[in-house]
Image (cartoon, protein in one colour):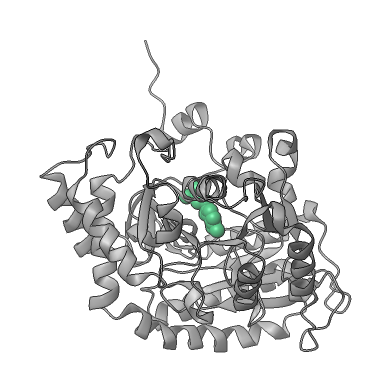
Length: 451
Ligand SMILES: *Cc1c(COP(=O)(O)O)cnc(C)c1O
């Protein structure tokens, strides 16, 4: 006879959870989420929680948003999936036009995949192959400049351009090399510059690297405005546009990874818009489908596309594709998501919410162990420190970030930290009342754990 296990027992017996030490998981109580509504999640016991990090940076309009549910149901009545190898489908075609219209100028071609990681892989391969195939003698441009503290996903290629040692170090022997430029981390500036007296040494170092190595560099890979998983590190104003100028000057492609920052998170539809930047390659995922279904896109320019456009015999085809490339259900919900941005004036309404969060966060500065507060739109990182004056970090073993999040959970909110950085990234649809309540929970949780 097979013994009937509880859901939690089954989970612990059969599932290997992502980014998780399973010993710790198995030995502790865990939540199983059964449903969601608006900005709340409900577990199998009926408890409700604010979704304070948008189900890891994905959700935009809340859960069970009628228009998004309807778009999926409508598409479901037609077809769930059909391949894009040798065929086209309706919603992915419509979505491509829409993406070209809403992204920065010059990005005219859309290549689909199903996660942020694959979108970055595709961008890397495109950039590499582009230089091999244009007529000039650029075949040796086969390396990338990336940033310290960068995160571009977990597949081997995207890990190669990542710079978070905790996640990436062990895989080093598997990875291709890239040149690592300094992270624009003003609070812990690697050049010892004080905030407010910044000399842009990180940009100068980036220029030095480009000057010395441009003949071998295919592209600069960069998270525009905010390095997300590296600790919500916000770049100083002007950093991104300067990086664009340098790429032009040294004939290097610019690949901006908007997987986390895209679709309104920073207060504009795309982070590049803040500094009038048009990249050569841009990746989007996470918020593209309102956080509903896995789909991503790598957008690029006519110039790059044309370097692949030739007779078959020229052997310039971009040989890349996934089983679920351009999935119609995911494309349909993405179209509905973009419609909602327009109909509900999401970006316009966001501005007051961003200000409210900013005001609320002011009060956090008085806390004894809050070293730095970084905000860009509705992306917030609160860096906890052992000693505010010396900026001494809490030892990682103390896991202060995790503890704060566990206390927040008891108070009815799900958040997930990045080391000692408490992350707040609520769904863009959150009302001012909801934002206020969520920030109060975070405030109290920090006080409880650190004071
Ligand atoms: C999350 C993330 C990725 C990876 O996306 P997945 O869909 O998890 O593969 C890539 N780049 C950035 C900037 C991200 O935040």
